[in-house]
Length: 132
Image (cartoon, one colour):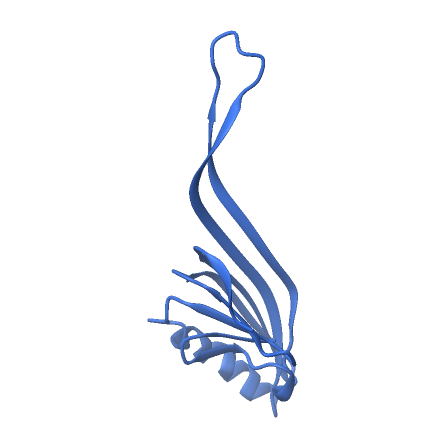
């Protein structure tokens, strides 16, 4: 799976030996609850507002511990002024999914030896399949 926001690649995919793990998608809808006096049950009304949260981790192997540390230090600068659309290409089928109106909520980056480790939490609106 290849994950990107515009030109910024968060997970390069199988060809670069990078894979997302602990991948999780949460959909939250705004529901209004109405209760009537002396009613036996409450009613829920879907207000049509959907929030989708995509969370995942990725590890990247570097040539040296110094390069891993440098990548972690520079990574935050790459995440400014991103495209508001998160795209996920599923390998090898090449199906593409998109999260519209997306923004990165949390990023955690660290290095451990020659590996940089990253956690991303991206929050957006509608999540949909856009190809195949």
